[in-house]
Image 1: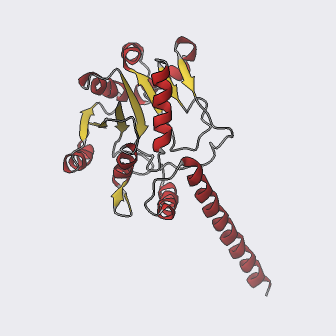
Image 2 (image 1 turned 45 degrees about the vertical axis):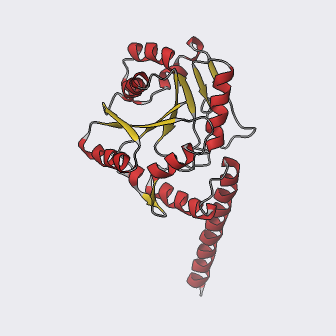
Image 3 (image 1 turned 120 degrees about the vertical axis):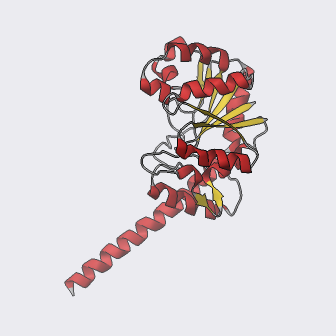
Length: 243
């Protein structure tokens, strides 16, 4: 099955984040590493833009023998459609370029659900109950082709599957969710603070590709440590002030 990774260098909050390195591996490299651990993905393509700054992503892909496609920066949906058509893929998996801790088993789960019945979209983001950075979508190309022809809003062009969610009654969508709401847990990278946290989580993994449930345990332990340190500093500051 084809997997498309959405990647660009012009992120507003943390420019160039996809090529930032954690333990000498770029975020994009970590994502690809995890996708390759799936049982279902046989083809990976990085979808980037024609913007000059994104040549760095192209350079990375060439160096690592990863397929890539360059298209409109604004119309990401069109970019995805061109890749699907070029690869003659009846369906494709969409993964964001901010998810270096993506769980391969979630990708396989989504793909298996799709294979059971040809849905227009299989997703774990509708509603969003999984941790951020664990989003997986499997999209049927035939339906997507019709969608791309219809969309005219900028946010539908930029956010590839938003049109499906905004018009859910018109599509055959299967959404799988965890037993609890973990949406407040952030395992994705959007800011420098996110990058610092994910870097610490990754180091705790000791180069192992862990399940999302295990990542949550590490995340909570780190958060508890930070909370303890914060309050310790606050208490010490108050004692110093009183003395």
